[in-house]
Amino acid sequence: MADETLILTVDDHPETLDKIGERFAKIEPGTTLTVRMPLILGLMFLEDPDASVPPPGGEEVNMAADFEAFTAKHCDLCARYYLNMFQEGEVALAVLTMEKLPASALT
Image (cartoon, rainbow, N blue to C red; front, side, top):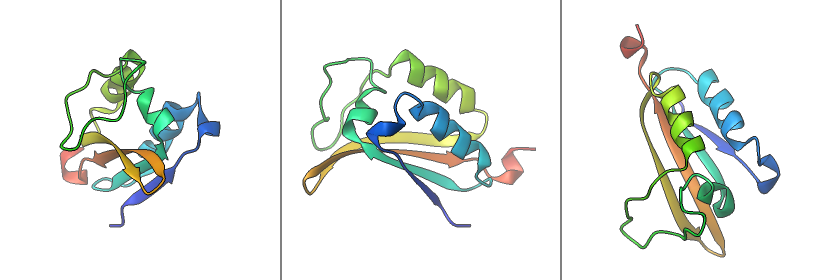
């Protein structure tokens, strides 16, 4: 089964979480959805409005209430998710990865 990618731009704000949720709902069980977006969209998932890109190796961060509600809404279908923020060349990106549970786990 092929994984899927959703690419968002700053124009997708404020519907970012709705667009991710709609796409996640449509993917097949066992598929991983990778959402690539500008860092500014990824930072809105964090509780601290002055947050910056975590250092290499990562760090624990507190999630914003909207993102906590989003993950709670999809937790019954999601095997795991993680959010990475990094520099790719000249571009600062946030990448949210959500793995949908396999069909056997959804019954």
